[in-house]
Image (cartoon, rainbow, N blue to C red; front, side, top):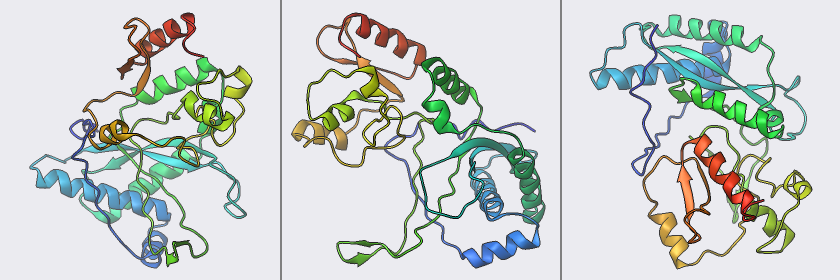
Length: 279
């Protein structure tokens, strides 16, 4: 069952977003008839969509399997107030070569059931672990041959409003740069109300909402008022596949080194620390 590599492309300015609406009641009925879950139905629909896309491009899909990242909740009970993410990731094979939608759904349901039974560790626990654990985890993530990713996010349980208008729909958009926190000191300096600032190890690991080394996602508020050059750069980003950046002390001109090579990033960061420029 070969995997498919032609979906692995650098995401650039031409990224498209397509929205597909359905009825939750209908999805539940389909899941019940096939002894599956709602998420299984969504994965089967994703497999059907990818199958149709590749066939429209003239690609052969016979016996084709596409691996996809699927979040797994580690909470014992879904009820009660939300208290942050407690999830792990599993890789589920999508049988794009299966033409029958019912058979495809049953295969996916069996695959997810088998994988959910395995013991897993929360991604948050790993991210907040020692540096060597974070490095090994990130290397393992980047080495996995996965062609797609998915999310399963419950909607709000009560009406939400923005400037007096009721929120009708919300669509999650996934980041496509592994499971790496933002990890910049500027957010912690903003919280400390001291820029530039020197941060202690305790301040870098205090796990506050502005601690982007441990908190996944963006901080709760902006941390600066951007100038014209910053706005222009945001609207006209340079093309590249970089994952990390750090002050380039070898250049000596205040510029940063951008790279998608983790080992190169770590070596540059160590030089910056030795030079007393990085914490």
